[in-house]
Length: 73
Image 1 (tube, rainbow, N blue to C red):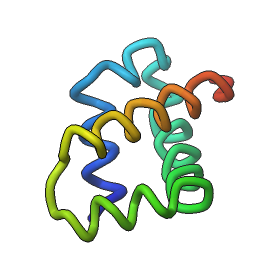
Image 2: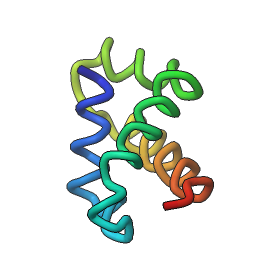
Image 3: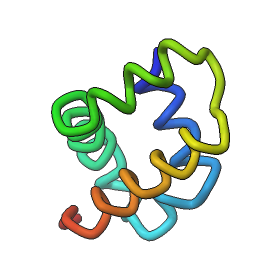
Image 4: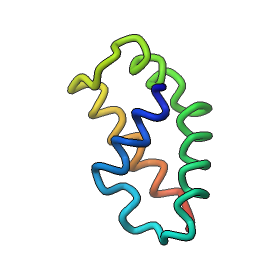
């Protein structure tokens, strides 16, 4: 559920706005892999807290920004 929460946050906050529609599924798949392999501690925090605290939001924004900087559509 924590990955889905992260994806919804990314969508609602414009992280997919510059991704071509045809590449959204690819981007989501790679983001899912990134979050579960490289940001597993953050995913665990979201799971444990059951809420997006200010601290978690800050970490999530940074994680999504880092992912997007390395993602090629």
